[in-house]
Length: 414
Image (cartoon, rainbow, N blue to C red; front, side, top):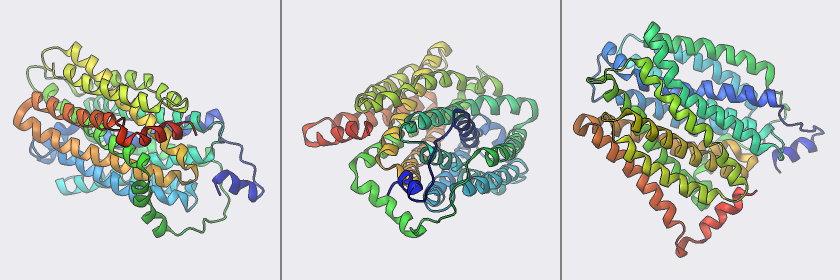
């Protein structure tokens, strides 16, 4: 029985989400996910104050992603079993606490532990996506998920600009204190906006639901294919954004953190254009939207490699990179949520584990590669991740796996 049928069986008529509710959830999702990315333009400042080497600063981002991955596994699926509204409120308050710990950290161990906790609790963003998908009516689900995903994309890309500007004004600690305050305000708004759910509990136990996630991905080629693509594209994404601060902050460029953060606005423009990917997937073009976007992603690295020789060419590459990655990501989410809407928490949690693994791999590999091979090595690394993803998509078109793309297109129309 899906969630809508369950409501009707209990005499509750689902009304879906209003435009205002959808936009507020989208804004909350963007604020939540931004906490994962604030550190990227601040790595040199944080490392200098805490006393970490340049080769090891990628550990800050990596531990955040590790925490995020654990949250995806153990927290997001809870929303399919307990009152997701209460889960959202509790997560928000705990996230604000973790942000304060990071902002007041006086030693490396405390900072790393705090960043891990921020990553763990920042999966609030995926609980919000799942909540939006479950509260939406079938007729509006695509639009609602697309709008909330746009909020997530905006939060990811605007985070660097926000962090850079606030850090230049008040230091990197001010970034996390400000975010903690905004998170508390966000929880207050969500308390008044999110509709209350029935007190009837799901009969499914937590551990069996948790253990069902790997089986879902192993049995369903569509989910596994989309998960592997997520791992590769976000490894490419993290490779670029984690390493970018290193050449931009060093001579001869010596950009301020505000200037470095503004690079995120270029990516934001590309991501806004990528929101059409969800609509294309709904019309049955998810497979080809994915392939074209992966080709654009690979091409973007040939432009990104021009740093530091041409900032204009680099900016074009940033635009294409974020456009392509978000187009694939939006298509992925559209496809998997449509597959089993009543299990949206588990599907999104499982899918985003691939995302988190890819981001962690990209972060630690990017800083290590830059220390050995400079920006040219980083460009080769990012292009390699992108090329593997494109090769997998091409392989999915071969006769031996011809059924897989058909299932992807079929599911994208559900």
